[in-house]
Length: 159
Image 1 (cartoon, rainbow, N blue to C red):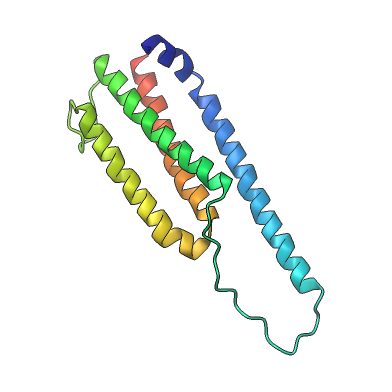
Image 2 (cartoon, helix red, strand yellow; image 1 turned 60 degrees about the vertical axis):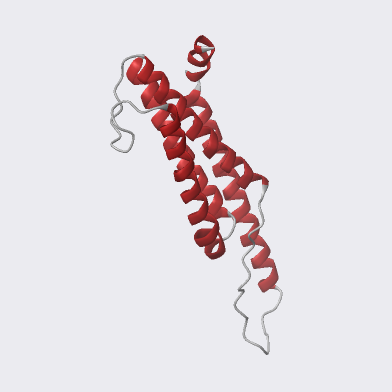
């Protein structure tokens, strides 16, 4: 299993870049679609007896891109835990003061679960109501990229 992990983990950089580009294209397309829809709505009416009303509704439903970015975030954190354990098994020392110098797998998983809970809470209760569903793409995408980058760093420290 370790050989298969090492064989596929070498392609992590390419996968991370591909997922980021797909996510970026999705958010750009979503943003362009919303802007075109608003322009079509307002271009037809040059005169209105009432001032335009502020739109207070923000769509908070999950889109396929949101689900993909959330899955990418979970994958990045899982890779981080696996690569940290791989590095510790091969003589590396943990530098994160939260874990200590030789953390157990349980401690790393509990820390990641707490961190993911905080990311989820901040995203769903603060960012999405204010900025809409694209906030999920940015929040979960950034967290996934960070953890995937750390996992690549861990793997390169040992090999």
